[in-house]
Length: 70
Image 1: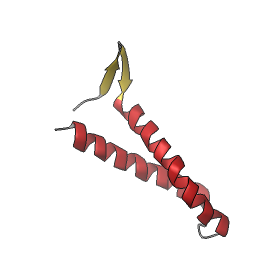
Image 2: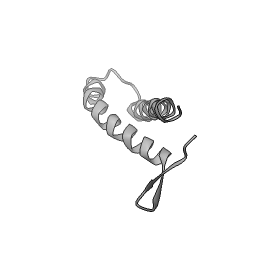
Image 3: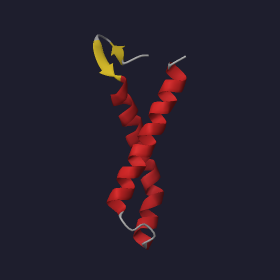
């Protein structure tokens, strides 16, 4: 399994790339979920946002394993 990428002699951990991709996706999803928070449909926004980011990070990790683990 790969653990890092080499970009012009600089080693970049694959988990860092996964975290950045998950964060970008999280910011796109929060455009929709912020409306739900404003309407009061989500009780604990901090816990919800943390859980959403962890879920997206797990999905991104699974995609990396599925795509690059072959």
